Length: 153
Image 1 (spheres, one colour):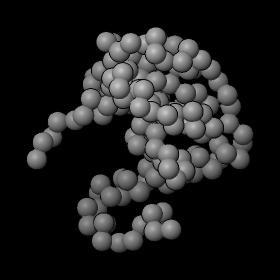
Image 2 (cartoon, one colour):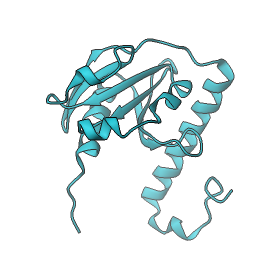
Image 3 (cartoon, one colour):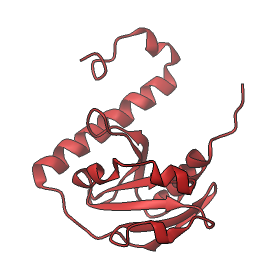
Image 4 (cartoon, one colour):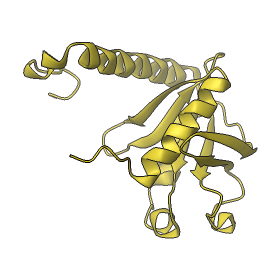
């Protein structure tokens, strides 16, 4: 079994390290609703919610047609790419993070579109519950034998 991470996962690792240095908590591969999965969701110290999509190549970016559907789930939206990525492909009205496996830097802040209060509350609860379930699965590997109510609907 290979323990090497795919390029997008390496970018996500660097992004998560950067977000932690900014006092954000992160959840990778978060599902805000059925059919959507964001690469990194970051929850800030004031409750702000950022979505960061990691793109490892031009093909990875051009094949992603669903990113616009993530805007309704966050206060700010960012792309995370490596230093060799052709950034001119990325929409200018989104945030930009340059990352590698060890860290990242915000190059362009995404515009802020504050979530409505009810959606923010629902998202914050969903993030907390997802993170707690993941932690529980980590500390109790036998947990998989039990039905997860979140996935059995």
